[in-house]
Length: 160
Image 1 (cartoon, helix red, strand yellow):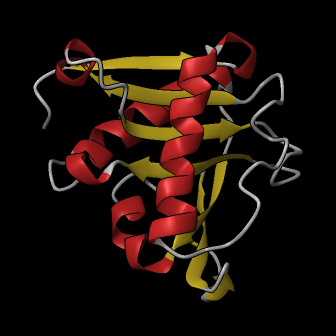
Image 2 (cartoon, helix red, strand yellow):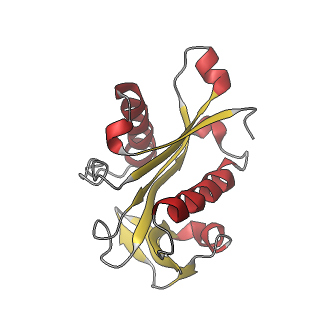
Image 3 (cartoon, rainbow, N blue to C red):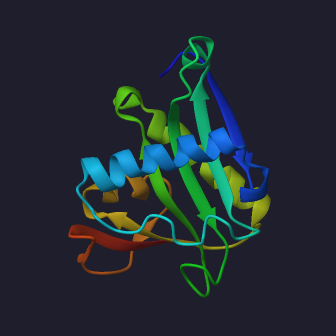
C-alpha cells in the first residue's frame, strides 16, 4: 500500500477546483481512454447536494507537487441512479497504485461513508462482471445476469 494517503470525503460544493480537475482527469483517463468507453462522464450526479466524493492523494506525490489522485469513488443518494437504493460508482484506482490492495481500503472507507451519510440504507451497484468476487467480499450479492454497459460486461449487485 502507498506509504501515506491523505483521504477526503466531500460534497461537490466543497471540492476545490484542483480536486475536481484531478478527479475528472482520473475518471476520464481510466474509464474513457484506458477502457475505451466513449460516454459522457459528466452526468449531473456529481453535483447532487447529497453526493459524496471519496478520494485519496498520496502524500509523497503532493510533496513533489504532483497532484495525482490514487483512489476515487462517489456515493450517490436514492433517486439518482436507483429509486430505492443509494449507490457506489466510478470506483477507480490510478494505474501507479494498482496491485497494492488500495481498492480494499477504498471500499472499507466507502462503506463507512455510506453508513455515516446514509445510515441503514441498502446499496445497489452496477459492477464490472470480473469484479464480482471483490464486491462479494464486502457483502454485495449478485442480483442480475450479465449485461453490457458501455460494451463492458456488468452485473447488478445489492448490499442490504
